Amino acid sequence: MQIDTTDWFPQAQYSPARDGWYEVQLASGDTAFARFAEGNWTEQPVLVFTHWRGLSKDPGISPDTEHMDAESAAAQGVRAAWNAFFPG
Image 1 (cartoon, rainbow, N blue to C red):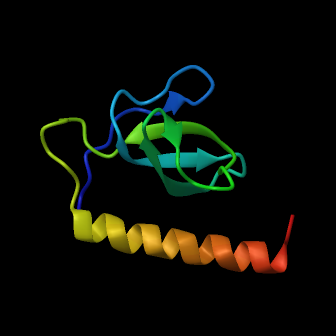
Image 2: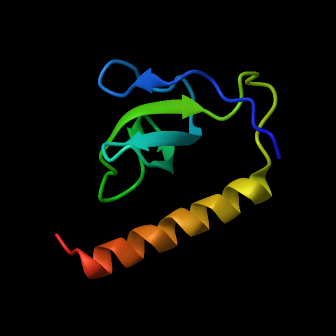
């Protein structure tokens, strides 16, 4: 599935205009997915990321929810494994 993403935005300067899932660029250079809701990033503990981008240039077209659920589950699994081996 091809996702027509927005450009990257610096996290320190901009917050998303609407709630939803976003791709984030971690400080390590890897990417992950994080959810923005009610003015805050919902990943706890907060992912350390420098940039974010929307998953659709057209706000009227939402990305495939099933695809996002799978990506989110995979990201959470990787994060849990990372935390198990590198706590703190």
